Length: 187
Image 1 (cartoon, rainbow, N blue to C red):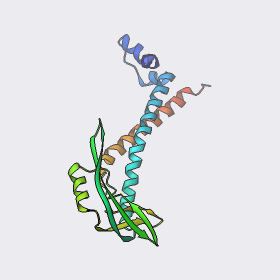
Image 2: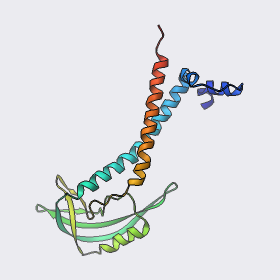
Image 3: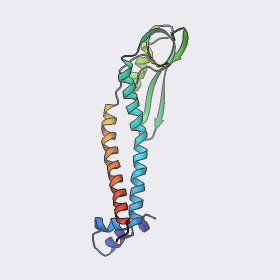
Image 4: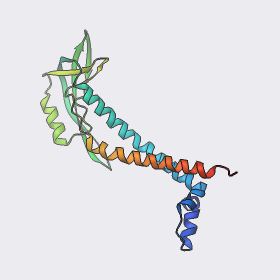
């Protein structure tokens, strides 16, 4: 299928000629394939970037949230595994707090994007069951809370993903614009 889609490239390579950008751009099926592939790559990159940006925003915002006293109910670390990134750990501290006479329960320790195993275990050890804690809660939505505000640490991943996503998006837009330009009927 790729061979058929990129027929101009393959034809040029078979007889020793180098394919040109103009030739690839005139092959509409190749340009559609390239544009769709780049748009798909952009879509795949958007989710982790958006997730990290939201964590960063909430982390910075949380330092200005109001505080109340709470009590720790339980603590444990949990992990997930993926072939790409290996094991990832998060501390989960169940705690209870009251805002305006309404009782809420939370489990977020921080807005960090990841922990090492030892960091997750240390966070669980800092909050033993029954201990008193300070809970920062979001003013408009007191169900959203955190024990350690302003602790975001996803800078390296975001620093790598954001320029890649911008470059891929720019390339996808260039391919679509080129496709539209070449597809325009001549007068």
